[in-house]
Amino acid sequence: MELLNDLKWRGIIYQQTDEKGLEELLETEKISIYCGVDPTADSMHIGHLLPFLTLRRFQEHGHRPIVLVGGATGLIGDPSGKSEERQLQTLETVQHNSDCLKGQLESIFDFSGDNGAQMTNNYDWIGAIDMVTFLRDFGKHIGINYMLAKDTIASRLETGISFTEFTYTILQAMDFNHLYANYNCRLQIGGSDQWGNITTGLELIRKMQGSEAKAFGLTIPLVTKADGTKFGKTEGGAIWLDPKKTSPYEFYQFWINTADADVVKYLKYFTFLSHEEIDALEKAVEEEAHLRKAQKTLAEEMTRLIHGEEALEQAIKITDALFSGDIKKLNSAEIKQGFKDVPTYEQKSDEEASLVDVLVNAKISPSKRQAREDIQNGAVYINGDRNTDTAHILSEQDRMGGEFTIIRRGKKKYYMIKYI
Image (cartoon, rainbow, N blue to C red; front, side, top):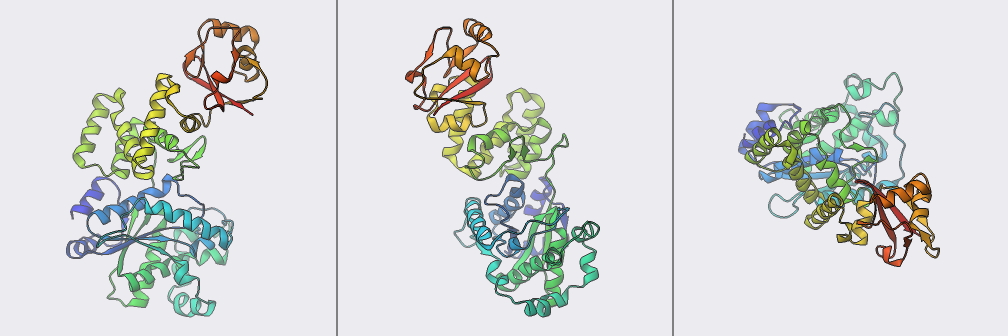
């Protein structure tokens, strides 16, 4: 009850198949629970996090998590939430993506001890099944009318759905049945769009394991933003867990820019802070919102969880340097993270360039006259230092790491001069 009450307090439970039965099971047994992800890309994004973090909450209460990467289902494509067919991927691509996702999942769970997490790939048991076996041993148990009643399938009947994606729900049901039979897995967790697939799994378990078989399903709500815009998306695209796709600094910035209206909900959803700690931060939002204590805590907790302590410290260092304008504290790697998306102008490294010319050529100032005025008025900074010399020539001394010069015009407009 302590675990389920915590999930309810955090607003994490969206649907359950048998609330009372699950309560009784969790009070009497330590069980195995699974959550899966299809390797449709070589990285997860933050939209994938909540079900897996919920799975980790079960682990922290003594239960064993089974983490499933869909090496087989990823070859088929889940129609859930999609208005048209997915583009099929090659076996090599899916295997590569599976390896990448496994590495990310290993950073979230504890794989040691009595309730250490287990990593599985459904290609291991689905990949070798022939068509006749699939139809006789599994397809026989799931009726067409039952499948047509599923929202994910019904919503696609007008626009069209292939037999391939039509059978996806049976494949995922086979996962639950396999894990129930071989790992004593009693509960599947998934996003709200997975309700139909989870209940198909329960139906298959009942048909194949007998009516006495007790298994359960639980779904997580869709994460939303108070302003109605999509969670986890920015102008630059998705917020990935792979630091090569979304740097730890960008990851940190995403969370620290959370709106006051959303931050307490996200603290409950995504962090492992206690009720008391979150209540205190909620009070801080109400009484001293300008200090943004809740946002800073959220950003620190999430960056530490996904990227580690060292990356968090680096993200905070970059943030502080950009806020103060003292960017000389940063090394080349930190500069690349912090200024990844600023306008960039390429300057030939063997050509002498005046500051005025660079301001115009890089479109930092609209004209030479305006460039000189900006310099004279103290509005131009080179690598964080104000420069008021209209005759200044950019030299080797102005190059950070020998690679680039950072120019700031005004308070916040940064530009990178990259030498080629």
